[in-house]
Image 1: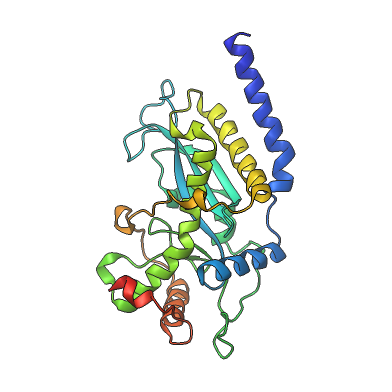
Image 2: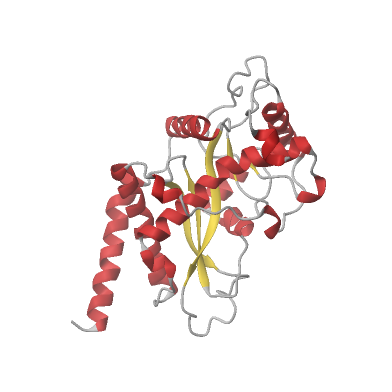
Length: 280
């Protein structure tokens, strides 16, 4: 068969995989689904009221014709961005694919359909609830965790920057990183399973988007049937918080939520036995 015939077969297959599997394997979470996700994160990472981890992955592509520097990213290669929110089982729950490589994760998230609804408080998140074993505490919102590249919001927590750290904030950063590591591992599993992500995709950006979306929904399909495999997480590597620049001032409400979480993870009742040794 000719190259164009093979290309059309792959394109059509990716489109069908997405259209058929997305409603089943990557359906928009319901309120009940968010609660199940939060339970999974707490059991696995001991981070309370966490309903997802968010980050962006640069999918390498060849330089599109007449695109200038739109797809050229800070890592010095051409890419489109896969922005994703995952659960504690390394499944993608929300994805946004196709932004220019030059765009920041924060701007991509703010301009995505999910991000717009989150910052407008229009997502079907569960109602605020007291944190686990904090019965006399103040009810807190359910949150997604991300790195410093994202804007702080009452529903999105990021770590404190390095310049303002004390021991309590270092412990909070560590506890948050335990939950955030899930999205790093999800990307690692995706790339190791579908090795096209280990090299440049030799296709136009719109075709690369279809390939990426198909791979993400197949990733979920396989994860839910193969179950947990310890080898999947062996090569997961956390990024240094200081590698990414933070964004501007956050609303006072969001800062208050983060400070409450700081006090919670540092309290005697809710601390981890090893957390002080880790930051020492």
